Image (tube, rainbow, N blue to C red; front, side, top):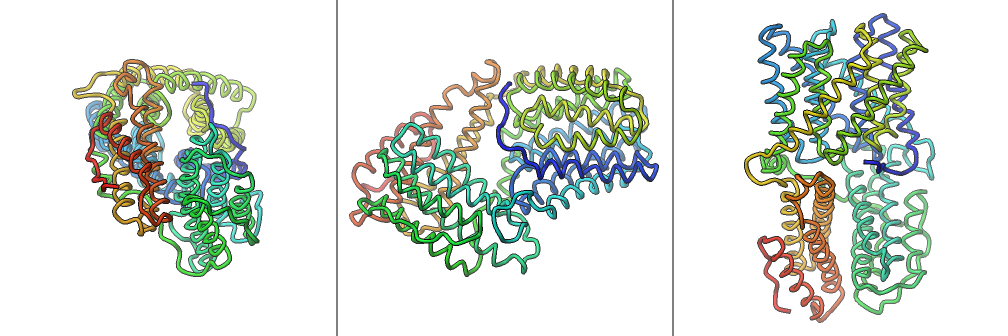
Length: 598
């Protein structure tokens, strides 16, 4: 509960968050403050998703959830207007329950889908309950305008500190690719020591981040094609370098200190856009060191001769696989819980005849999200953050009355949001202040302590529904993640043993295996931090993930051996593969690849 993400302050995101108040300020200056509220909500929800990364990836990461949010706002407004006051007591709970089932199931397929489901539900609840004079289509367009303004800021504003030349649009991509080379150096430095496993995980995370950073639409294709080709070539050159470093770390032998100099110089060259210069070559005494030497040579060639078409990397999952994941056991379980929360909170809120009844179901939507931390932790953080935010806003409302001071409060909250997202309690406090300021700008009476009561009711609802035993076994999310990781590891192993000369296919399958392993680790850690009633359903999953990690690392070492060992796979590698496959099959039965006799 007390753990917060660490890192430097993202000053560029802070600047964007403060400038995102511009549509609201324009509406207040035009004496139409209610028109600025949907725009401010769109900017706020987009700001929560405004994480470090490339500009091109931000287009989909912020834009797709914004489209879902505008659709939800339109649907909620139209449904309330069509149902009227009386029938809405029945229509709205049913509507939000169906939306919760769909959005919850889709949210289980990935982070962008999770943001889409959240914005769809939250905006639908706000559209159904917030009394604004604007029509449904107007609200939806204003919501898109607010989110679109933040996306525009994300695309056009340069980074405050730029290490070198090149198009500022590619700053995030350059930093992500440079981090891969830095992580390779860190893994080589830790080889043979106790930090090797953690450094290998850090390298995998850096590769995932770089892979994501190079996705998305290409803006100004012709103007940036040369720089993009260079970055794609540098990323592709890092893949065999990472493979060789993983094989050396797997061997458990300490390496000479000077061996990390080459990857570090490559990292500096990516950041500055300059030349890497001469690189020292390691001694070619075994297969892994020969692979490292060859990888450094290929990287130097890619840095000096970046011509050619951009390398296509395997990104994400297809729509068909995402749809199947939504209706898997994990998706159905999460969808049912979200639907139950939406229906129960809507019925309770409307039965209380509270003026701001929509706060209760909107709060439950945020709280029921499993990617915000363990259930008990996020409920407690929500309660503490709401009380703190309401107290702060109560003081600000007394000291700084007036619409323009409220706009300044919204701007301040927007600036704090990129840092506040590192801890759920702090994020809740900032969002509470922002929402209460928007309520006053909309002409509604102050309701700071009403917000506290609604949040506490939402906490109780989510705690109850989150622990209700549903038909079937629990822990579907962890089981689905482990199934995916085991399948990816087996595909990777089959390819390494069956087609060792196909380096491009091997790179893609290796990335898939390590990404799936990281996702399984995240799901396991989250489940282990839940209350015992939930955590006991996934007991022992950590041991399965450890066995799977050893298998994937061994497969990578075997790939290096087959590529740089003329006599085939050494007997020691084949024996370790057989032993690890047997251990994994005992812990987690799955289709086993055929291992050729070595």
